[in-house]
Every structure is written in structure tokens, then in C-alpha cells.
Length: 427
Ligand code: EPZ
Image (tube, rainbow, N blue to C red; front, side, top):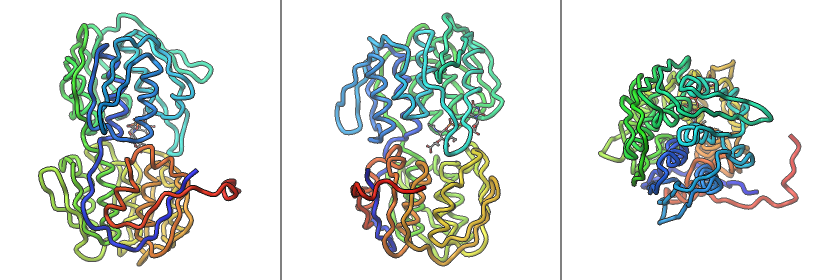
């Protein structure tokens, strides 16, 4: 078991390069199954969710070969199993993308049924709605969800709620179905467009990704291709917040500034300067941080995955800020940790009212999920003194070499092993 030890209070200065997008990678890797051929995927982030996805592919019968840093060749020609091993699928919620891909190619697939998580209930009814509309049946038993149905037929699906996962899974299951599928009220996140671009590179006919309606003309077969994953919007936003809260000056490289607009707009309202270049943004503070109001919404609204980071930033902004969580029922668990650092935040359901304090104090901290963990890192970087963050495996699910990247910006952060005697702790 390891933890981060951070000696905060130093401005971050320099350049940091953003890795490939986690939430695109975890859908594109299962999508390679649809090709029954070799795909080369570039700009894959080195994170544990990608490791798990590659392991699942190998277990299903794909040949996975590392060609270089962040580049893998995946040959799914001989995939011969349609059930994702329980232990692997339970390590990562996004293993549900294997359902859509396996259903699309083989007419059947099975993964562990996802339960609720730290963010609240995580239903997959909209995923199943799309599968059944295409002609599949689903069975949930013994903690597993199994879908099966040969000869899927194009259909019309109107989603009851805007869901990233259901939109992606519907695309995966429809690209090889017979005829046209129309998906309405879909998610529009950059990773939806990235998956559509990847599917089209494999020969699929997916149109409209990035709008409310996606139209798919089913193909008889797809083929392999070489594809480079987009930069991670949320990793970029995390370094933007870390630069701003430490009063630093950071050039965040390998980004698509258009994808960052919802984040940039709110940072600017909070008194942060964001200079845009072709594929980079420079972030620094003009003066004091200012209070603002934020509500998380599906893209192009402010992303829920940036909510914990913005709450940290606003905890040291002058005045009263209000942050409303519009996507998840329970995404303020980390606030208790911030209060232990001296933040003045009151949470009532999905709303957090933040009275800015001049600065946060160092403390021993515990990450409750991926983005909460990243937010605590930003908080600890700003607090003068030594903070320790436990349960960093959450953070390493989605941030490639975070310690090295922050050290490159001058941060005093290291990953240390927790001594065995200190490991069991009363909760
Ligand atoms: C994706 O989760 C991301 N994960 C999440 O990022 C992100 O917070 C979320 O989208 C919203 O942007 C991945 O891409 C792997 P949803 P997903 O389906 O697809 C409800 C991170 O930190 N809903 O868009 O699971 C659901 O309860 C993670 O990187 C249904 O009701 O999210 C939620 O309220 C955390 N029925 C809302 O829709 C369904 O069938 C949005 O969920 C599906 C979802």
C-alpha cells in the first residue's frame, strides 16, 4: 500500500503534457473486438483502468502487444470467449463496454452487473434499453448481466436520460446490426466523438456524434486500423486547477482547447487567466480567486468529473460560492476531508455552499474516488506544510504518472510505501 506525501505551498511552474483520455480509452479498447483484425492504438494512457481493459482483452483471446510507449497492437481475430472474468470486470465499472462490443460481434456477452458506487446509484437500464431495442435479451442473475441475441436489427432509441455509457454501448452494439439505428437524446462528450471516429476508421458508418442524434448504418464487417486517442480533458483541467490554486504559471500541453471551454469559462469567472494556443493552454492567476456558481451538467455543460477540483479551488476564493452537482447523487464525500483542512463548506444534498477561507491547512487525507483524490492532491499542493494522501490506487486508475508530472512542475510530492504497522486503521 502506498500513499502520497506532499509538502505544499509552492507555486507550480513549467510545462506539463496531458495523456490520452481515460474515458475514451476504456471504450475504444473493447471496440477493437468489433474489427476481428489488428488495431494499433496510440496515445493510450498508462493507467490502471487501461491495464485492466488490456487484461480483459487478453483473457477473451485477443493478442495484445506493446509497440512502444503508450502504443499497443491488439489483434482480436481469435477472440473466442464472450464472458468477461468476474474478478476483472469488478475492478472497473467501464467493463460494461465489453457487453456492447461482444454483443455486436458475437450476439452475446457477459460482465459483472455493476452495483452502486461512491458517487451514488449507477444503473445501466439505458444500456439495456438500447440492446433490447436492437433485438437482444438480457438476463441478470448471480451478480452477472448477460445479453444475447443473434441478427440484431437497426432501431430507434430515445434515451430517458443523457448517459455517456449508454450512448457508447449503443454505438458498439449497433455498428454491425442490419439496417439503420437512430439514437436520440445522446451524450455529446468529446470521448463520444472519439469513439465514433475510431469506429468509422474501422469502416463503420456513424454520423452525428457530438450532437443530440447519432445515426448508424450497420455494416457487415469492420476492419483494423491505427488510431490515436484524444487528450484527456479532465486530466488537463486538473493541472489547470493545480496551477491556479498554487498561484503558479503552467503551460498545459497536448490539449484540444475547444474541449476545455466549459472548464476554462468557469476558471476565468473565478479570476484565473487561461491563454489558449493551438494545442496548449497557459494558466495563471491575475489576482485573488473569486467566488462563483457552478452546476455540473452533461457536455457542453461543466463536467461533473471536474466538480471536486473546482470545489477545492473555490474553497480559497473570496466570497461565497455555490456548487450544484447535476449528475451524481453523492459526489461530495471528499468535502469532509477539505473541512479537516480548514475549508468552510456546507453540503445539503446535491448543493455545496462554500465560504472561501484565506488558505487550507495540511492534514492526513484519504481519497474516496478518482477525482476526489485528484482534488485532494490540488488541495495539499496549496496547503503550506506536509499532507499525506492514502488510497492513491483510486487516483492511479485515471492519472498517468501524476507524481512525476507534478515533480516536473516543481511540486514536492513523493509516493511512499505505508509501513505495515500503520496499515490497519479504525474507520
Ligand atoms: C461516465 O460514467 C464517466 N465514466 C464518469 O467519469 C462521468 O462522471 C460520467 O460519465 C458523467 O460524465 C466513464 O466514461 C468510464 P452516465 P457513466 O451514464 O457513463 C444515470 C471518472 O471520474 N444513468 O453518463 O457511468 C446515472 O445514474 C468517471 O472518470 C441512468 O439512470 O455515466 C447518472 O446520474 C466517474 N441509467 C447519469 O445517468 C443508465 O443506464 C449519467 O451517467 C445510465 C446512467
